[in-house]
Figure 1 (cartoon, one colour):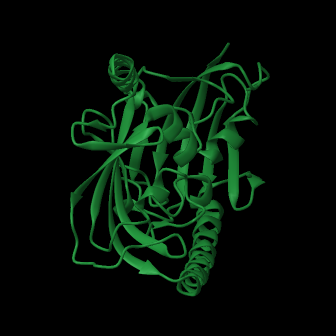
Figure 2 (cartoon, rainbow, N blue to C red; figure 1 turned 180 degrees about the vertical axis):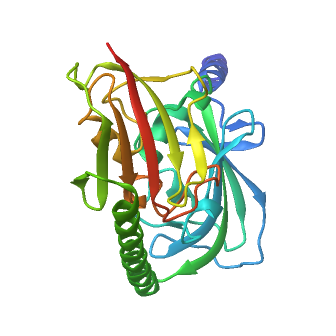
Length: 291
């Protein structure tokens, strides 16, 4: 009897000790799932649970811990964003909820940018331990419906790219004297050449720039006497078109760079909404220094 009681006390004590060592399963109303937390914000009117055989049309937004939005689906050109069986692992947690349900997630910052944006952590999230990701399930599609939708998007994209190509060709013929095409429908005109050091991977680059729509409207620029500094070749520093174009420049050179949207802000436009989807851009660049 005493031995049995002793065993019961011992086992109970061990359970308490090990349970105290476990990581918390909840945090401020969030439930833990793998290496992230999530919570249901509101219920929709849907009654059927979704599953991974479906494609989920969602509205979504990303915030840093200061609640500043840095990405949201309403800035996508097609106004659509889907969760599928091939989505990043944390988004697939949305399966099992119903149409109309709204959820919020806390994802580890480094993993989120690596999985979702395929990039390093940007400066505005450097000090944050996690990213807030909110979504609402709008509609479900079957695989066939999703494929048909993708086909229509591809047709729309082809039409937009043809339109951009004509716009850029008209701009180049009217505003440039001697240009080189360095990528499909992307052009560079060196307006002030030099024989100094070339831009190379790993070099610290200082540059001044101004970005315009094709109609001449200024949309982005470096403030007066303040150069943009970065290490050439690091991920997330430049849009793809500028990364390709700068490789052709030298210290002290000035150039005009004309980019189609697929090498600029693409079908989504800029995250702050200043640059619409499918918008070609012109950049005036000056390489101030190379170290």
